[in-house]
Image (cartoon, rainbow, N blue to C red; front, side, top):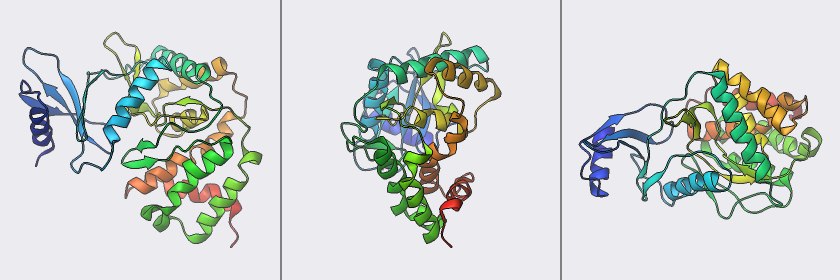
Length: 292
């Protein structure tokens, strides 16, 4: 079944009988999505999977959007409908290619991180990163949480085991043992959890808006690292200068980013046959910890 036909059928079954068609949109890496056309009505953004995962994936995403808005002050799309197989949201616009837009985004993300500090790491329940469970059991120690719940949990995934040999996996475990020596202690705060440039859009009046969260209370630098290490446009450089000033980042933050990005690199390997160089990045990072 063509993607747009599938989305149209599911929208009709969910009660959106006034939708006459679905226009495909680009950008999603895991789900399929489109713009629902409603003659005389407001268009809607619709998201689904060809093979719907078990569990509460879309409910968790809708919760994350609400939490970021209500607790963290971020602008997120309105949830119009959430079911096991369908998420329907208000429509956002492409972000403008301007430095002042990214400066506003830096203020928003810095406000999220500095206003939501928490005494523990985790979340009320597990949620999702793409089609994979994000493990969120409460932990008092940030290094333990990052090691167990954000890095080592990926070692059991088949693609990760195929991409990293036994010595690489053992080296990754040694790196995790050394995290207190490699990273400064940081408090937990509410994080977006999947913050890269494709998940930053704009409202009609040009304000930054954020989509596709995988929320939890963890290090703020998890968000910073994902945006820094993944492709972003030249004008986004203004984001990092402003964010660093607003949050008091030390001058060594850039050197830490590859380690903090380990979680996302391993997730890419686990989810996709083509990992955009993530496996090689992980192998290079753990090489000093190998014992050949």
